[in-house]
Structures are given as C-alpha cells and as structure tokens.
Image (tube, rainbow, N blue to C red; front, side):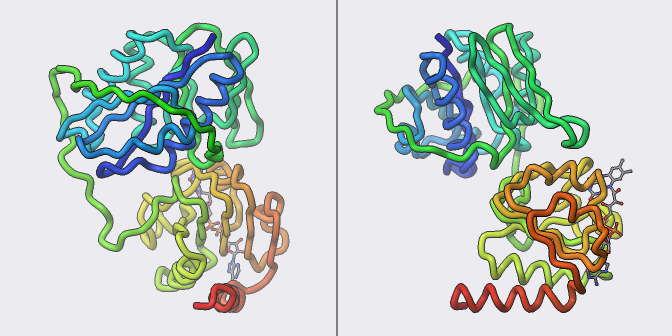
Length: 322
Ligand SMILES: Cc1cc2nc3c(=O)[nH]c(=O)nc-3n(C[C@H](O)[C@H](O)[C@H](O)COP(=O)(O)OP(=O)(O)OC[C@H]3O[C@@H](n4cnc5c(N)ncnc54)[C@H](O)[C@@H]3O)c2cc1C
C-alpha cells in the first residue's frame, strides 16, 4: 500500500492550478497501489482548502503562519520533512515550479532519499516508475525507484486535473520551529502583470524574426486576443535585450508544456525545442519552410509574420466577438 504526500502551492492564500495537478497525479498513484493521499498546504491563516477533496485528497494538513504566505525555504522544507517522517509515505509529490525546484532537493537531501525532477509520467507496479524527457527532450527516460520514500517534482501543465471527490478531514498544524537564516520578504510582480510562461496553458512566443523589440506588440496583441495567454521568447531576443529572461523558453530558460504553443519567427534550434517540445499543440509561423520548428509543429504557416500575425489576431478577435 502506497500512501502519497501531495505538497500543494498557494500564492497570497489562493491555491494555484498546479496544486490540482499534483493532487491528480498523487491520487492516480495512490489508487493504483491501494494507498491514500494526504495534502499538505503551507500558507496564511485564511487559506481556503475546501476544494481539495474534489481532486482526491483523503486528508488535508494545513500549516498556518502569517509569514508562510510567501515561500520560506527553511520552514517549508522542515514542515515537509517532519510530515514525511511522521507518516508512511512512498512518495512526496510537488510541482516543478520555481518553488518545487528549490524545495524538492532540500527535502530529498534531508530525508536522504531519491529525487526525480521535472517528471512527466508516474506509474505503479510493485513500485514507482517515473518518466522524464532527457537529451533536450529527444528521448524519454523511464526510471524505477525502489527506496521509499522518494521525492518527485511534476512538470507543470502535464497532469490534467481530474475530479475524484472525497470527503477529507482537515487538520491545522503549527509551523515547525527552525532557525531561519534566509527569509523571503517580498515577491515583486512585473510592472505590467503578465502570466508566467511556466504555468500558462497558452503561450505565444516570439523570436529574432520579429526584427526589433517594438514589433513584439504583434505577439502581445495575439496573446491578448487569445485571452489568458503568456508571452514567451527565444534566447536570441532575450540576449538582445528585447524581453526579460523570465520569458525565455528553452534549455537555459523555462521548460513549458502548454495546451497551445505558438512560435512566431523562431527557427526551432534544439535548445529552444528542449523547453517546449512537450506542448500539446504547436503552431509555427516562419517564412523559411525548412525551419526546424516545422519538424515538431502540428500546424505550420509558411509566410511573412508581419502579414500573418495581424490577420490571425483580427480573426481571433472576430471569433471571440471582441
Ligand atoms: C548552451 C546554449 C543554450 C541555449 N539556450 C537557449 C534557450 O534556452 N532558448 C532558446 O530559444 N535558445 C537557446 N539557445 C540559442 C539557440 O541555439 C538559438 O540561437 C536561438 O534559439 C535562436 O533564436 P531565434 O529562433 O529567435 O532566432 P533565429 O535562429 O535567428 O531564427 C529566426 C527565425 O525567424 C524567421 N523569420 C525571419 N523573418 C521572418 C518573417 N518576416 N516572417 C516569418 N519568419 C521570419 C527565420 O526564418 C528564422 O527561422 C542556446 C544556445 C546555446 C549554445
């Protein structure tokens, strides 16, 4: 029997969508092995956990503290380690977001247990087998993990949230007392609020084909017309100072897995593909029919982006009645 600890994520007291993804993956692992799912949430007092039963939590453990509305590495790690040691868990699951990428290794090191990062598949058959892309996404590696527990971080947007209603019990727990050497004081939002590419379900990305920074308005306009879409960028334009590094997709940027990825004026270098090839649907707009991006695109438009993108934006606005 394999019980799973799902470590959830909130921002300003509201649970993030990745929390549903983690619960969904934890539920399917627990169902396959006949185990149960404990959901661990760290956050401020007002956090609303009433929906967690919907996605399969059997038990909800809330660690409340005023300074826990922001990710506090040492307190969060101590709380996850403490909960893991107090239960009989085969896996500790979290999302491979910025928080999960920091928290996962801390927890695994303290528990002296295996860590699997950026995982895109989890199976159970007398033990856990995970899948994750390797070699810039050219191959999928399957690894069976024997020691228990293990820490697994899941690539955002890969595990589609599924409802699996339960009636969980909820326990409130005080934060662990730890010596805090570094404290997160504030998270600064960008001046113009925009979605993080790592978590968006639709991304419109621009590359050097846009010729100059000002032309990124074409990408932004299309993203706005689509609604709730993030704007991404290739490294070439980030290096040129047209966009911030936070928007960069690829090997040295962010790994994304949206439902829809639109690449505009991006050639599709292997390092760019490494960050976006697991997107569900890929659309490429490029004037060079031999551009490598077309090899992985589901839909390709060969032509001048300066003609195509404004027309596409207008058509989408018409369709959406804007
Ligand atoms: C160690 C390392 C790490 C790297 N990490 C990353 C990374 O994380 N992310 C990343 O993106 N890159 C990364 N790179 C860089 C990568 O190799 C490429 O140089 C980069 O992705 C190219 O960006 P681009 O496609 O925007 O530009 P280009 O390769 O110059 O492509 C521009 C494209 O625009 C098209 N185009 C031009 N004009 C038009 C037009 N009017 N209409 C339509 N299409 C047009 C062209 O046909 C071309 O295909 C890395 C490289 C190295 C060595």
